[in-house]
Amino acid sequence: MTAEACIDLPCLGGIHGEIEDWVAGLEASRTELESLISNLTPAALTWRPITDMQPIGTLILHIAYTEAFWLTEIDRESQKYLWDDTASSCIIAAPTKPLSWYVFQLRHTRTNSIKSLSQNHSLNEIYLRQKENGETEKYTLRWVLWNLLKHEAHHRGQIELLKKWYEQTHAPVYA
Image 1 (tube, helix red, strand yellow):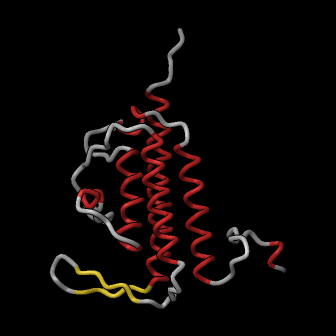
Image 2: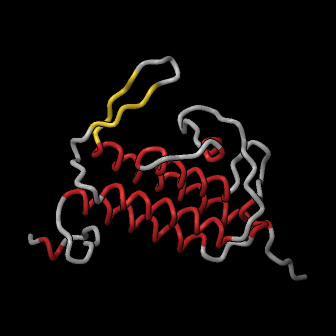
Image 3: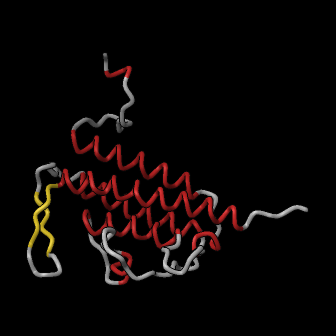
């Protein structure tokens, strides 16, 4: 079987190499996310069907700022959107902003991430992170990129569910 007969990640124009393949995957994932949220209203972005569930807008910011945490920098205000997905976390209200504001956050973070990744990084580069108990953990860039892809896909699934739930709840009822 040849590569032409396989489903593959999109290639970036004129660039070849392993990091570029990961960036292409990140870009494909982000395109799917932006397509999914393309018609959401501010009400849909801040709606919560139950009180202990993150709204779509909060999930969007969590995706963007988790990427910034790993690949660029994150300011103090944005840190509230970082949480451990494997543990219960406090519910954070989404800002009442238009969709364009949320899309800007996603795109701005991605632009900065790609700038950072284009600076001759190796997939074997080590990222150090302090755990809450003070221990330092080491991660390769390869692990970071893989987990950013998984992370975005995970939350994109939540966003899709919440979007459908919102549409069902707010659909007009005709008698």
